[in-house]
Image 1 (cartoon, rainbow, N blue to C red):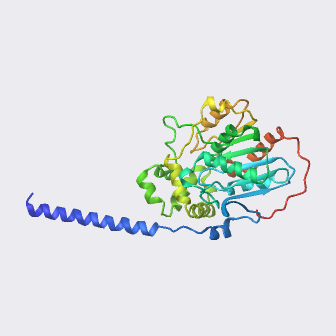
Image 2: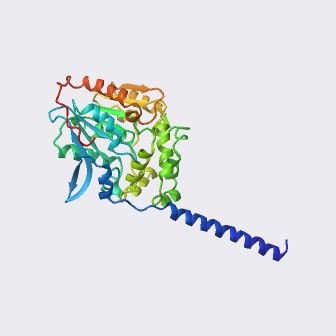
Image 3: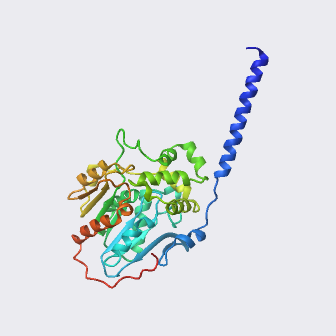
Length: 341
């Protein structure tokens, strides 16, 4: 190849590179989305009975505390990138007979980022304890979904004297074995890539969020535009994207579940697991049930990662049956106010 031909090839190559650069840059700015203020988000996603835990005069943790004051207490903890809305159907079914506390973990929902450098399961355990202490609850049943499930069993190890019961819903915590995790949603795989994370923290992730949510349900048609919009909007609260990226990056401390550790849990336990879960393998639910002494296992065929939404009535009935074995059958109470639902 002559020198002139080499120059032509090189020029064409540069043109291609520059064109790609322009396209990628334009695409980045087209997808770039600013944060959404907490005031704006609260106007859409708060409840009439929303409460906020404050520290040093600053708002930190969003929570609800509803139902009869003298009833047994149930505390609900959501999973990764979710919010307390995941429990709405359960709350409606529980609030008549139980005092129900739900909360948004730091960096999720309407809660602020308490300390992103320290975000992780230990911080979440501390957050749960701060909320129950604030409302003067000394004993309760703790329910956790996915990452919230890992928070729940970690809490059971840290504060066993405070729990009447423990419920793990498609809970996280076991290390993936060979071949597990291959079906993770694309957004999870991207979040584990350092270069992708840096780009994604400023972008509109709606399409990836939709894909991830559809992976979370055995029936993806349950994922509607309103759900995708809620997840997308709440992820754009100030500092939330950074928090979510750090949690997925592996940079946060997570103590994995082991048989030896979980054998120390001495509280009535129910393990609920969707058998069609593409995020937490059903085998992990069985391992929790095998490792925790006396644990009950409820498997749901053709159900994905979020049974509290996918089969809310059936899963709530199973929860209530479990609770009836812990607490005396509650006396019928007057219907709690329906505001905020």
